[in-house]
Amino acid sequence: MRVLDHQSFARKARRRLAAGAAFLAVAVGTGVLSAAPAVAVAPPAAAIATVAKAAVAKAAVPTTANPLPSVDPIGNPASISVLVNKSRPLNPASYAPNDLINARGSGQYMRAEAAAWLNGLFQGAADAGTGGLSIVSGYRSYAQQQQVYSYYVSIYGQAYADTISARPGYSEHQTGLAMDIGNAAGNCGLSTCFGDTAAGKWVAANAHKYGFIVRYPNGYTGTTGYSYEPWHLRYVGVALATDMNRRGFPTLEHYFAGNTAAAASIKSGADLVAADSSGRLLRYPATAVGSYAGAVQIGSGWTGLKQAFVVDWDIDGVYDILAQWNNGVLGVYRGLPGGGFAGQVVVGNGGWDRMTITVGKWTHAHGRPGVVGYFPDGVLRYYPNTFGGALSSPQIIGKGWNGMELTIADWEGDGANDILARTASGALINYRGDGWAGFYGPATTVGTGWQYMRVLAPNFGLTGAGTRGITAQTADGNLYNYGLGRGQWTTYSQVGSGWNGLKLFK
Ligand SMILES: [Zn+2]
Image 1 (spheres, helix red, strand yellow):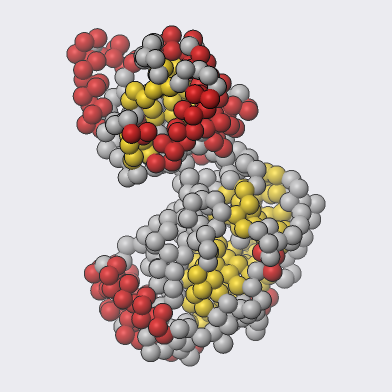
Image 2 (cartoon, rainbow, N blue to C red; image 1 turned 90 degrees about the horizontal axis):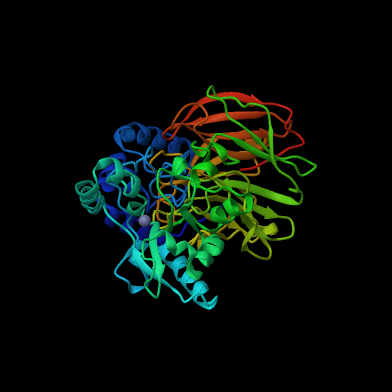
């Protein structure tokens, strides 16, 4: 029996009140808010009635972000791998980052992550005896870029201005990920001769180690649309920059081959990923009609898994894999936009093989998906993923969860994830999340007979854009898709067979 703490309920309810009038209106409208503090676990029959009512009342509520969106990582302006060039404007054109900081106190701005790595780059250049780097120009807003571009047009005319300056909405400087740099001594400022100085040469050879690329290299004007600019650095993150360098791609356009996310190993939240008994990592691409095409091998050596999860751990728009190993390690493999995965980053050490976990966004307070799970003691804990790397200290969110299988999914369709728990006797119970790392309202039984399911994995977009569902792998090797509506099941269909030897990733 799961006992929910009433104190915690009241606290979370108050927090919900503070969270916004719209949310409150919804909760009151369904009658759930008043019921929550008094009843922890309602009898299944009454609970189902409650859920049905809520579903009707919520028809007009806008949904919030899908926890595993199927996105284009190079079309999202907030993604560090966004591709911006003369044929790919920012969308929206007025995009402005929300995490700009003053880079090295220069008065020029960059997004926080890029600015942090820029410090390392500057230190590296100084340590290498190059004479050091200087900051010239960072973030420019749409309006500022409009001024810059108009100025060049007034002097040189539009045709030439287009080779040296971006139109507003088309500039990498507007992403907050670009920085023009120079020599600390001041020579060769914004001139191609910067590339021949000690600092310019060091930057060209080493920038990738700090997540930067020289965005407009010599000889690729036909591809990038810009003349050689050895001073214009673009932050793309260490994993991508290093991968580009290792595989010899001269430009971002080459790396992405002018396409969208198509190069990533896991392309969609509808794809299935599994490991077979010989450790091959397989992707089953979802088709447009709610089925799967034949397997594509995307990795090897995946033996020794207790379970694994497909998740965008660092919210860069490319799917990653969280691996729960039998040796107790919890590790993340970041998906690269150009395909493949970066090496394992250990995000949890020791004893994770003894945990039953599920992974997903568990609170609006954290943008990244975290881990919810329990040791054999049955105490349910939430481990926040604060930085896209190692997990932070857990908070206890429940007890008595022994023997439950856990799946994070938004049963209500209200934008706050819930936990679907499968009991040993095969009941599937929805523990409604309050969106702030706690639970809310009565638990409701949403299914029976689920003891024959070996794995439950959330899916996104399988039967159309915006659709959600649960892929269930049965003990006899069949796969079924259970479509999720708002507080109810929708479609139901068999989507696979012969999966006995495969470990389906959740
Ligand atoms: Zn620039």
